[in-house]
Image (cartoon, rainbow, N blue to C red; front, side, top):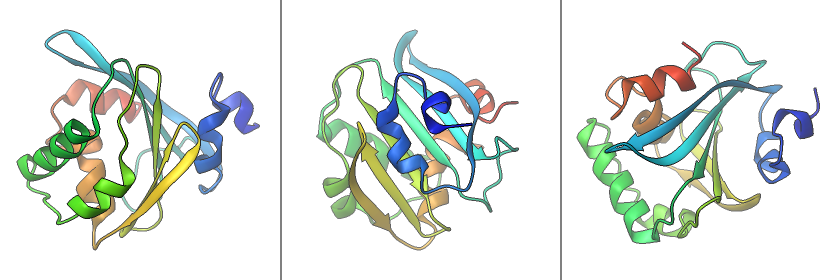
Length: 158
């Protein structure tokens, strides 16, 4: 299946997905806070198979609201701390994250346990490197202690 079919209306995300082996959509979900939709998430796994921390995967978030760079960075670090997976990566997030507008898409693609690369609307913003950063960062959305078990389960296709 071509990436154009895999990511309807978003050829922008295809760039980062090319870094994965046979990326296929695994699950989709909408994250809501106090009933308001904040972003739509899509998880891509090799061949669309079951989610596995030991394999590389990609997570795309399409924002439903404008969010400042400061809020993205602080909320990410706060969530990493809340779930017990803090990492000293503020400086890297300052490079990786930009303010988002409604409709913008961030794609995070893992490359082993210690790297996550980011694309905003198809343009690569950075590669974050830190021991265990894949699990530390992605656990905010896909971990056992995420803010929304239903969101996480839907992303994982469960």
